[in-house]
Structures are given as structure tokens and as C-alpha cells.
Image (cartoon, rainbow, N blue to C red; front, top):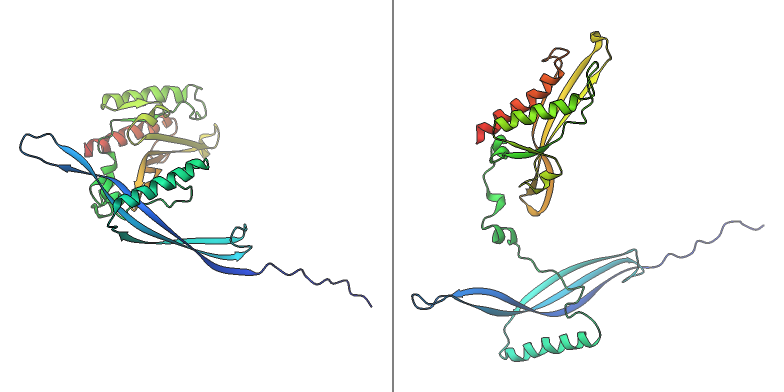
Length: 273
């Protein structure tokens, strides 16, 4: 009696290994001011330091080291290297650059690790952003004197004309301008510091029958922010919000409810400016 089952094909063996690499890194371009006698012109020079860089790559999985299911993890160890004869090191770099050029390759290898200091943010900013005191909620409005806003596409409530949004855009723009705040199109807000944009949302339920009719208004001001733990991450974030509904404003006062967004935002901006 024959069996229909087949012996499964053997899976590729899982492997784990380590790859080593040694590299010599030349750090240049550290500019230090040298102050001469009083009145002398400031000069700049460069200080070169050499480092030995050891790369260890652990590989595990299938079809290593270059298979698609192979996992590679690299770790680096560095040591400061102080050669007695620096000219030999300079010649070594020149020889390696020449060899790469002869092969039509870049002198800087594409796999070269990117070097960044652990305190890069503090060095760039002059302070550690993680150590800043936490601000008050309205501090995000400090210095805000212009933002983007476009209400022209707001859906009109029952019985209102199609110019509902356009009229509100003009009315609220005038309110903000009276408070010394400039309104631009959201696309133009990309050129403003922080790219601030005020978005207003209006919704209603029910129809012409006012018995079951209700509406709500929600507004949000967004700006770009940086993560304090990693200032390379920049995202849009809601920094101010406001909401109201038909409980506070009677039916027929939808426009007044939306205009109350301007009054609330102007009040909060004036509190911190």
C-alpha cells in the first residue's frame, strides 16, 4: 500500500556567525580660534585625531550572510590612535583614495557608519532639551501672530446659503486682523515659523425639523514640534483646541458659534503675549 505523504524538504540550516571589520577613521575639521596679541586678526586651524574603529556584525537566520531572511546586527568599538608618524597615516589615506578612484568608486565607502555624538542635540542647541522646564499649556501660543485658515468649504446648516463658509472666512479674518493677527491660506502657512494652521469643523444632525436638530463646532490649531528626546523628529501636533455645540448656542446661531472660535483663540493668545 502506497502512502500519499511526502517527506518534507529540509529547511536551510539556521546559522549564527560574526563578521569583523577594522577601519581607521580620520577626524578633521575641528576648528579652534587662536587668539594672538591684542588687536591681531583671529586665525583658525584644524586638529586631526585618528581612531581605530572595530565593526562586529552578528548574523543569524537562514541563507546567511546575504539571504533575505538573514538578520544582521552591527556593533562598533573605537579606540583613540596616536601614531608617532602622522605623515604615514596621511599617505595611507591618499593611497586608499587613489585605489578607489582607479576602480571608479567613491573614496567614502557606502557602508561607512555615520558618526554622531551622544550629546549631538546639546552641542547643536547649546542646551539639553530634556532638561528644559515644562511650559504651561498656553505657552505654545507665545509669539503667534499669523496662521493659516480656510473656512470656505464648511457645510452650511439647513436653510443657509452656499456662501456660508465664504462669509465666515471673511468675518473671522476681520476679527483676527483687528487683534493684530494675520490670516493666510494654509498653503502659505508652510512659510511661517512652526507652520501654524487653524482648522474648524462644523457638523449638524437632523433636517429642517428643529425639534431633533443639533450642531457642534470643533477647532484645532496645529503647529510643527520637535521631540525633546530626539530633535530630528518633527511632526504636526494639535497645540490648542476649542469646542461648542447647540446647547450653548440656539438653532440659527451656527455662525455665531463658529465665530466664538476666534474670540476664544484671541483671548488665549493675548494671555501669553
